[in-house]
Image (cartoon, rainbow, N blue to C red; front, side, top):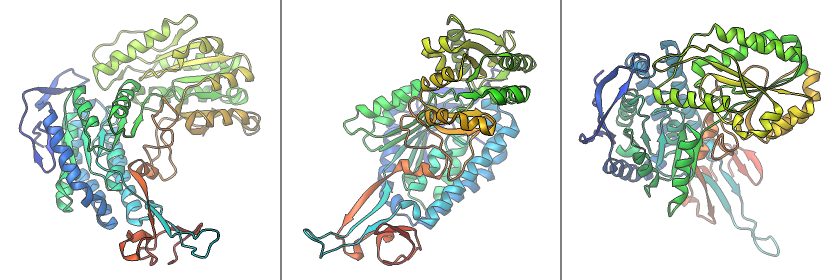
Length: 528
């Protein structure tokens, strides 16, 4: 499928700029055709202006039509599956099976949001009827729904070129809310981004959505993203990436004359706690599963476990030895691009420079290109307490095992954790109850707590939370996965003493669409 390398502004391609860049195959180092044109501030202005012009029509679009629009995006993506997966393989080095699965997830989350929108209850209609005879003052008629926030800027992620990029969860949630979207594509996979953007554009046209519903801006310049975030018509930002990148966007958005929310998913080490009995009885199998989780996708998952806590003793020694043996057999992993490899190596060197942190597992051979070998390091809790940087994310196939002298020291370690996306606890049933306080500590520091298993991977469903306290995200109240993600791009509006004819449909006495509504404190589908 032919690629243009141009910016997709509404329904049209922008005129080529002066600066160009190319994608690079991380496996071979070869530059990939074609040349892609660097976006300009003028391109951003045009895209955002179209989004602002489209907003009122987008947010007023019938829920059924909006749901069908999301479903059409899913269909358009599946129509180009072969070309899309092939290009993504070239630009990321990810295997075909992984990308086919990721496309399936992308399609499924679009369909999930379509169902949510068609149901309509996501607006959370609330009705408190008037009580004119109340003393000492009458009660007015007050009704509330959630409405679309405005045009949204979405930054594509490098590690999920489909599910967290142009047509990924952030875009799906914003479009579902009725917000036009301007995507800043990740420069590591511009061809994949253009193909996905073209699929959305086709859906916009087939469903007769306004032209500014979607635009795609591409380029390597960080200044381009800054121009997008600072544009006065952008009302929210969604980002998945590094702590430095997310924090930079957050600070920019806060500096605006009108500050706007930034929903950034950033760094997390996803700690694992192995309780003594589970470690004693299942040490070998836990080591195997742990190594598989750490090395999955060369560790390039937001939920990859980077810290493990356990009480010192023969069981922990055996666990580490088994993990060492398994890691030594693991082949080098392919990083998504050279920049990620360089940051990974810098992170490992930073950890090794800490007195009391030693490398105990993984191949030591020097790899070339974008390949890296997995790394296992070990230290004890006292060193962990004295060096907060041990708890910072090193994005890639690595983990630090922290030995604790006692249950109390493990609890203190949990209390010293920064905000995380996940935390995992392995223990027998009675043992888990004995460590109940640990779970209370973790609830304050993470967005998802697991008992058993490992956190790598995120189920897309209504109850999933993919978020957590800073620095995992910039807003611990939100999620970027699951249907609750739509709330990031909605805001409440209250209507007091409105005539029935002027009320939004979900707030009228007659419940035409059979929505769940909170009426005088009772959840019901009845008419008022």
